Amino acid sequence: MEVTLGHSPRARAFVAVAALATLALAFALPLAAELRALAAAWTGVAALHALHRLGGGVRLALDRSGAIRVGEIAGRVRDGSFVAPWLVVVRWQPQGRWKNRSLLVAPDMLGAEDFRRLRVLLRW
Image (cartoon, rainbow, N blue to C red; front, side):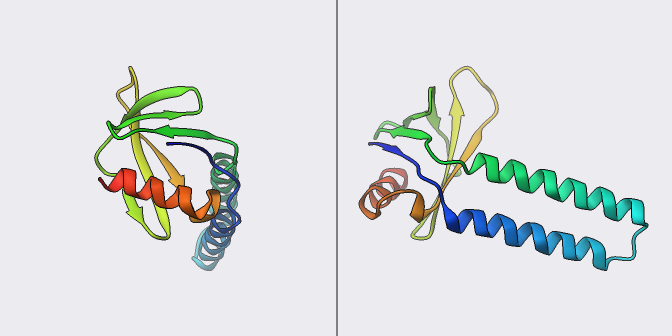
């Protein structure tokens, strides 16, 4: 199976809501102004990083043996992937690396049939 992941308005909205909720919590706590500013800066950087990682156009190739290619990086699917009708998280390890990576795939990043095929491949 080979697909290109698109942009996900749902995932982007979730990141924005989570960042705003974190900012509201940081400003509701009895903290010094410097700590509030640091929390706001950290939240902004983390949100921008998450939005950047959600950029579409990533090519994903997966086969039944567990081999995966994300963009130009080949690897293997690892235990710990999450499959649900509303979200797929692919846990994989690039070849020659020791650290696992995770790839979030929301339903609106693929067509309905491609999303179903991805879920079936990862489940079995």
